[in-house]
Length: 249
Image (cartoon, rainbow, N blue to C red; front, side, top):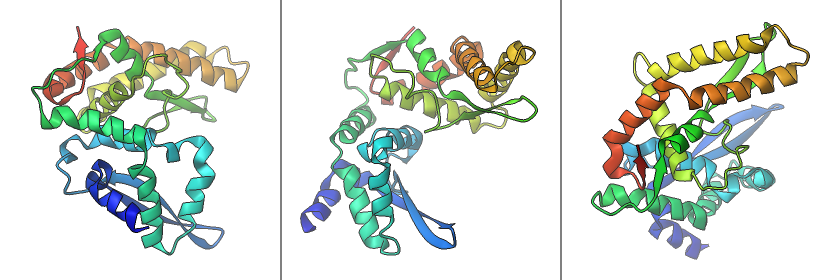
């Protein structure tokens, strides 16, 4: 186990990532879960959201087929020392996560490096639109939607191109706008969702089909949304030097 600890101490993940233990009660029993997060003193904190996206979505341990493995480690509670050590090493040993971390950190540390990867505006908007995800029909037929790091339409998109870095950027840009007092993206999203719902509300034959129709239409509307496009391109211009890709427009 000493070797694993050494690896965590010296790896790029171990340098910047820690774990947050979340405690909760289930059927009267105290349980725990854990999530990776940037260390508060990491020099990457200015870019917290793009790394948060990678930490939540990329690791093998976070994939649906590994849910039992996660629970086994979390069940080590109340031995939080062992829980943290074993769980953190899942991230430290994750070669795919390390690769994306290295790609994302490189331009932050060396802004003048040449960026070979390029995306166009259509790809930007295709990826960004998938964050506006309808997931439930309420009793009054209003549709509940989330804009979330994990609950979104990315996984069901099945793109042939690897958009992971662009996904992280879109998530960062959208939520940076959400943090403002009068978020333009949020207002546009609410308006587009209302219009999408109204288009199908009078002809509901199945709530499941209604949800699917509104979800698909909202994706299309957000893909063409001028406010979302403007705000993301503004955010890109502010961060062009610290991103591992270029957007051609």
